[in-house]
Structure formats: C-alpha cells, structure tokens
Length: 133
Image 1: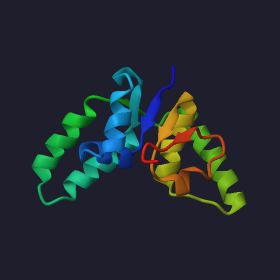
Image 2 (image 1 turned 180 degrees about the vertical axis):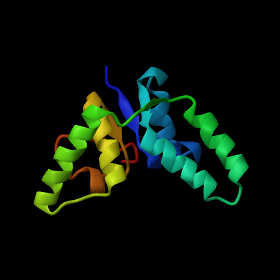
Image 3 (image 1 turned 90 degrees about the vertical axis):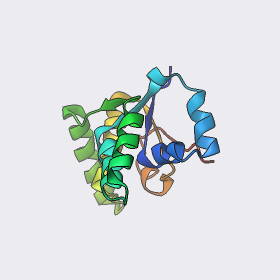
Image 4 (image 1 turned 135 degrees about the vertical axis):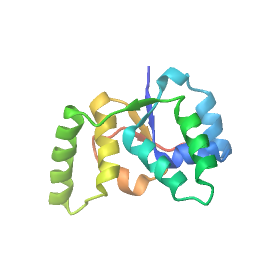
C-alpha cells in the first residue's frame, strides 16, 4: 500500500480545484494521504500573508484537518543531515525546508507528491511523483 506525502504546491492546487490534482486525490484512500509540519507551516504563512487572513486561516486549517501531519523527528534529522552533506558535495543544495520535507518523507518510506521537480529530483533516494504531468 503506497502512502503519499503531499507537498504545499499540490495542497494549494487541490484547494484551487486544479483538475489533475483533484482527480488524483479522489483515487486515494484518505488514510494514505499525509503532509508534513513544514507544509502545514507554509500554508499557514500563506494565509497570514494574505489580504483575508481570518477567512484563509479557516480554510487552510479546515482543509489540513483531513491530513495526518508528519513531524520532523530524529530519523528525519539524520536523513536531512546526510542528504544535505551529499548535495553540498555535489554542488546541488536545495532550500532547507524542502530538504526537511524530503527527509520526513524518506524517513517513513513514503512517496512525495510535488510539482517542484527541479529541486526534489536532486535527491536520489526520494520516491517522487508529480500529479500535474
């Protein structure tokens, strides 16, 4: 049974009704859909940074209540450090928050769903798919 960690871009596409993403979501049991505390934080930031803070906070919190939220734990921390060192040696660093999302996903053995292929595909051990293709 495949489990999916949904990146912020895909969460936003779903909330905006992007057809490909909505169709992919409805094919998967809700118990197999996850996101991370990092993605949760990114969506909260988007709401706080908007013109309609209260309305968007309510929308984001209501939507995210349907997901199991994965935390950045000790295993993810080790994967983060190892992967960042490897990417640095290769001259391929990515943003720490993206790397944290990837490390959480890898620590669970799940699949990351993201449209941000440019950054995430640099991580060789990450199982990555894109519902926008």
